[in-house]
Every structure is written in C-alpha cells, then in structure tokens.
Length: 233
Image 1 (cartoon, rainbow, N blue to C red):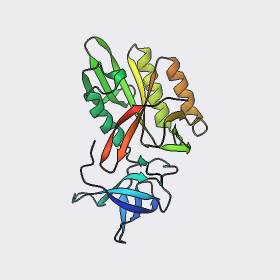
Image 2 (tube, helix red, strand yellow):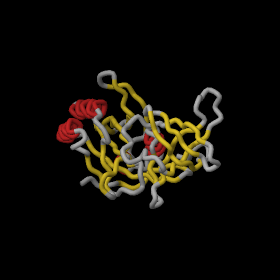
Image 3 (tube, rainbow, N blue to C red):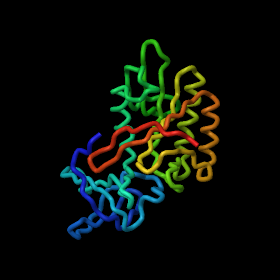
Image 4 (cartoon, rainbow, N blue to C red):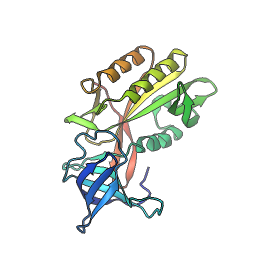
C-alpha cells in the first residue's frame, strides 16, 4: 500500500483531544494535523519526535495534514494510522500472500456477524469452512524488540474475541490477526498487565479453536506492506 500523496517530515509539538496533533514543518510553520489513532499511543506521541504527515487538498477536510508515521532515532518507523492494517491486509489476502489463508478465493471486508458486530474480513471457498478474521494494529513496545497488545484497556477488543469464540464453536475458522505497525520488533506478546480481561478473553478464545496469526510490516514514507510472520513469546 503506497500513500496517495508523498509524505513530508515534521516535528511533533503535542498530541491532544485524541485526534489532533500540532506539528512544526521544516519551514518553521506550525500546523494542526489529524491524528487517526484514538488509542493511548504510548511511546509514540512525545514532543520533539520526528513524524511524517500526508498533505491533502480536499476542500471537505478542515485539516490539511494527516499524521501517518513516527520515525525513531535508529531509523525504524511506526505507523500510527489504525486504518492502514486493514488496507494492507486486504491487498495481501486478495493476492493470497498469507500462507495460512492462501487457499481462500473470496475476500469480503466489513461483514455483519454476531451481535451488532462487523468482522474485518470474511474469507470463503466452496470446499472450506468460512474463515472470520479480526485485525488489530500493534504499536506498543516497552521492551526492545517486543511488541505488545493492547496499549490500553479495550472492552471492544474483548467483545471481538468473544464473537470469534462463538464463530469457532459453530465450526467455522476464526482468526485473530495482529499486525505489527513498527519495524523494530521481532517478537509479540499480550500486555496482560494493561488489560487482564482482554488476555483472559484471548485464552478462552484460543482454547475454543480461535487461531492467532502475527505479521510484521515493512514501513517507509513511501508506504506500508506486509512483512514476515512474527513469533509469540
């Protein structure tokens, strides 16, 4: 997935009201950018960080910049846009690039299921059980090289796991897919100290047949693509 408009570098001044970020452009101008991430963004929203913004000329948008990336001091990147994982994975699923899911020939996004829920992707094949996939963006790193999810309490995430558990009990495939939106991690674990309820819901889901897949991404100011599988610890 390539960004539709070339990104420009900036310096983060502050992030506030969840969806707003003041940034300093290279020419010294301070602007307000849209922050497409409602989460805690722990470790990714410190003043002085180098960030990358996507400009737009859409007259319907009040803010003319969207925050897309954080560039770390070691040259690694983190993606902060929570809509990117689904866009990256849709392309990967349609191209059958994910080995564990490559046999499916139909990819349907945002399908209603369960109790007032929508599954991120429903995969189908005439000779296979339907496969329900829930996607989560992972950006938290508290120990070098170790990505964790979630970065804050997520009742919605626990509900998704409960819905997947029911799907698995009905005989379908159910997959919880964690996509690491940072390039400096090669391992993954659940942050059970941040949200023990989510961790318990995951244990129940896994015991009932819900599968877990973890994939890295390749991130640059040009775009984001699917990377290699990542092990859990």
